[in-house]
Amino acid sequence: MISGRLRDTKLIVDLGAIKHNIYEQQKLLAPNSKILAVVKANAYGNGLVPVAQTAIKAGATGTCVAILDEALELRDSGITSLILVLGITPVENAHIAAEAGVSLTVGSLDWLEDYHQLAVANHWTKPLKVHLGIDSGMGRIGFTTVESFNEAARFVREHHEFEFEGMFTHFATADSADDSYFNKQVNKWEQFVNSLTELPPFVHMANSATGMWHREKITANTVRMGISMYGQNPSGRELTATLDLKPVEQLVTSISFVKKLKAGESVSYGATYTAQEDEWLATLPIGYADGYPRCMTGYKVLVDGQFCDIAGRVCMDQMMIRLPKPYPVGTRVVLMGRSGDKKITANDLADRAGTINYEIMTNISNRVHRVYTD
Image 1 (cartoon, rainbow, N blue to C red):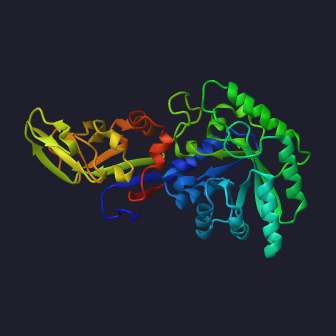
Image 2 (tube, one colour):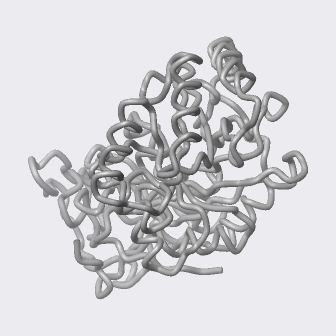
Image 3 (cartoon, rainbow, N blue to C red):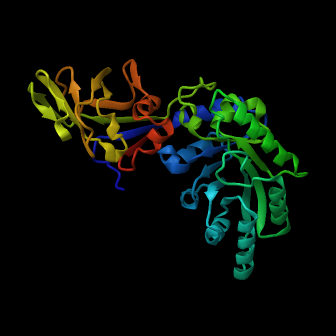
């Protein structure tokens, strides 16, 4: 998608906040603990390469992505540190990862055997770095029994096509006040860890939520820092953040058109909004195609430190707001972020949309131009 550089709508990404959040997490971890910066989904919407470069400069040992294409984009940008693909890569494409020095998640012995056969048949000689995924209760991918995991670990160590670089799991409820299921997962994870006489270099079980609220349970040497790196609370509002987090992004636009709406006149699709009296209306160059949800109809934005209601339905590319007085074209409007002493957070938008802050962030489309500050 084309980036709207010539439209005054942008996502302002504070790279200094990325560094701050990483420092805050690092100082609470055990000595020599490593951080992998999770930059999948275009760095949660903030820009894959700039965020990854910033995280590494701030001390992250490496990065995590969701798909191999994201990893290759990082390699092409000049990033040489560890890059782990968290999803399962089709075995026929795994040699591309090996050549690029990209680490892959493996969750079954069958996958390893298939790659071994392909490597022998095609004379692939560069070892593939693998992290064995353990399903301790997420139910998504990974080994479910210690026996199958140990068999896979032996296979990796016995065949020169592989390098056993890591093992990991992922928690389903680390961001919940009820830690019973979390503890069940931790216990299962420890069975896998204790089954090996020699651990791989990277052992990671802590996501953002675990790094915040369960540091005493971390039996690993690496934390995967995801949404907390972007200054957001993994639990939304259920638990209070234990880190001093700084939000990384602001979604802003500016007024593109101003008019006086007469009493009785209606606005936008469906004519769902009708002025009860004469009022000032502004049009904004942003809509649901930019990732600002249509369900925000009837919500609010910030203009000059004041909350202003959205008038009528959010359109694909534009939306209208009610102003307390006439403001000139070009006046700044904040849809997520701070204006004066007021703010609208990702959690606020998520509450309105009936979703989570992760989805609000990752839904901001590439048409919204990213601007970076430090």
